[in-house]
Image (cartoon, rainbow, N blue to C red; front, side):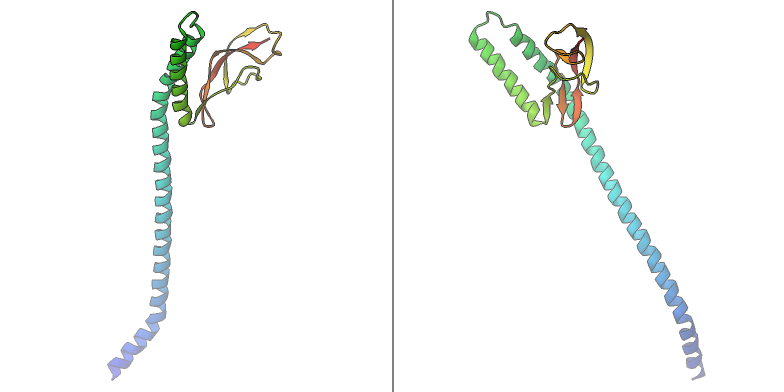
Length: 162
């Protein structure tokens, strides 16, 4: 019986300390788990953000040349002259279709004519005398600019009234 009493005393004396040690270890393990969970969540968000940036960058490489094609349509339509109406209508239909595809991707033209020159939206290529527009306003669009959502995809090349 003496051995049992001795084990009982040793167990009761060590039990509260052992329980506290285990509680502390459990608390540390739980904190590590929460930290790892937060780290993984941050990693997941960062990877998703990088994926979206990569997709957008890839689309940008395709969209910028399409804007040049759209500029070509605008130039051709401006110089149609004596061309048959069916040719003009065909070019206008193709231009509208291309513009519609770009707008479906969130790309829209920047309206600049008459607006105050803004270096974030406009690239000034010169100045012109103008009685129609006040000084500092966009008097001519040399090349139309486009937005992609809130970002400027291509600034409008303009001549500013002086």
